[in-house]
Image (cartoon, rainbow, N blue to C red; front, side):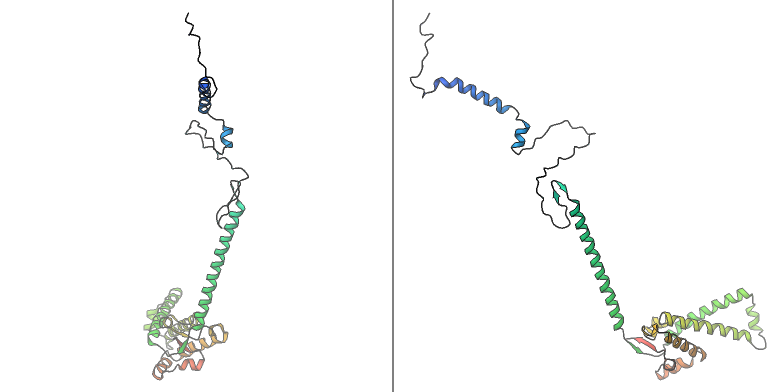
Length: 269
């Protein structure tokens, strides 16, 4: 047996540390094993990290609901009209208030626009100016065609209802010529209704409206007495055969029918 087999060299002092190599290697391996091991979820949560759970994905399984944040989450100030989150949840009261404010603002703007339009319309009506004018043959021609058409329609209805042979009565009238008087009466009545109603309710006949003429101002139409004046003007023109006053007005450049009855013929400036 060799006497040097069980002989071991040891340092005189502890400074060299050769005798601690085995202990240091064992300690390193222990720390490596602890580091390679998965840390506990509680430790990661305390350090501010989120634990990601790896689960099998099932395509038929609905997604899991999101986790609510802690009540300690501070509310973030938001601009009007956006949702404000308090404790991770939307605050319904703030969103409702924002919607109400938007609706109130829209309603207020619409009301202001309506008021401005109505004021503009009133101002435009008050600024309209009219001047006296005379009979226009172009307007009279258009009105005459409409009156003739309405008179023929009334005559056709009368003949159809009464079953009268109009051609025989016209070719062989009675001794007093009542058939001709009836036709003239129909034409006069239709003309009176046409002129009076159009001027009272619309201020002008279609022919006068086409050439920017009217009888009286819009303010005059609100008076009941003016309606009588319009009817008197229509009756006067019809009684004179639709010829006397229009021709005199055109030749003398004066509205004689308007001066007599008070329902003057005007034209927009």
